[in-house]
Image 1 (cartoon, rainbow, N blue to C red):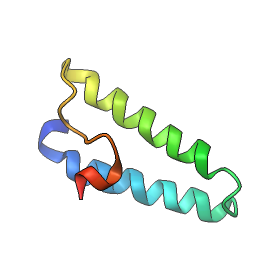
Image 2 (cartoon, rainbow, N blue to C red):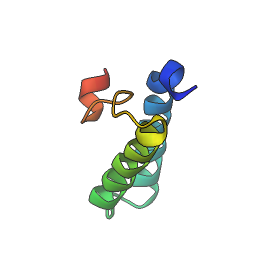
Image 3 (spheres, rainbow, N blue to C red):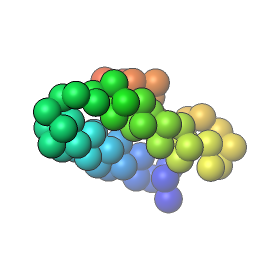
Length: 61
């Protein structure tokens, strides 16, 4: 399912990160970005392949 919907998942993670960053006044931007990257890595590795998400959000645009 992740293979089919990686673009939507990526967009949702980006939206959630922006929302959290706005709500915290930008104080935790690095931590929020890092958490998003870890979620992407975790989801990407579920099928044993690192092929669902790019290395940066811009790679998936």
